Image (tube, rainbow, N blue to C red; front, top):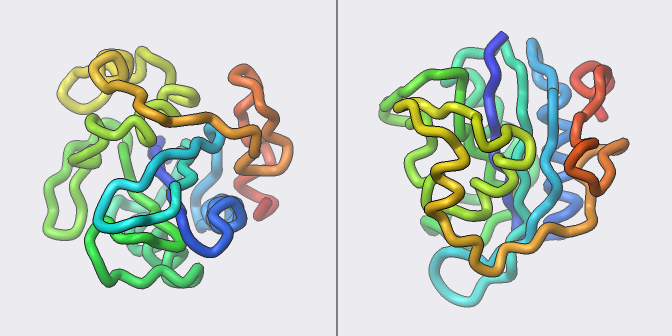
Length: 185
C-alpha cells in the first residue's frame, strides 16, 4: 500500500455535497483506504471570469492502485459527478488531483507527481498541512512546512463542515476512522 494525498475541489452544483460524495467514492475505491481527511476550506476561484468560490479539502489515502490506475479512478469519479472539461481552470462540479504518491516523482504525459502547481496554492497546502503535518517530506527533500511558510494564505477560510461522517472540526480529530475505507462512508 502506498500513501497518496488527493486534493478535492468544487464550485458548482452544491460544492459541499460534491466533496462529500467524492470522499465516499474514494473510500469505496478497490485496494484503497482513507486514513485522514482535512477540514473543508473556502477559497476564491482561480481562473477566467466570475466564478463562485471553491470548497477544497485533502484526503490521505492508502492505496494499492498504481499512479495511473488511481488517476483513471479519480477521473471516473469526476465524470460520475458531472465533470465537464471545457475550459482550463474553469468552474467545475468536481476536481480530484493526486498531490503526492508515496515518495514518487513522476512526469508522464497524463500525470505529474508531485502536483506541479501545489506549492503555489494555499487551498492545497493548508489542508495538506492539516493532515500531513509540517514535517511531511515531499519529493526533492522539501518539508511541507517550508512550502506553507512561502505561500501566503490569502483569503482562504476553514469552514465548519466535515468531509466525512465522524470528522469533527478539530485538528486533533481528523482521522477518517478504521472502517472508512471499507464501509463506503
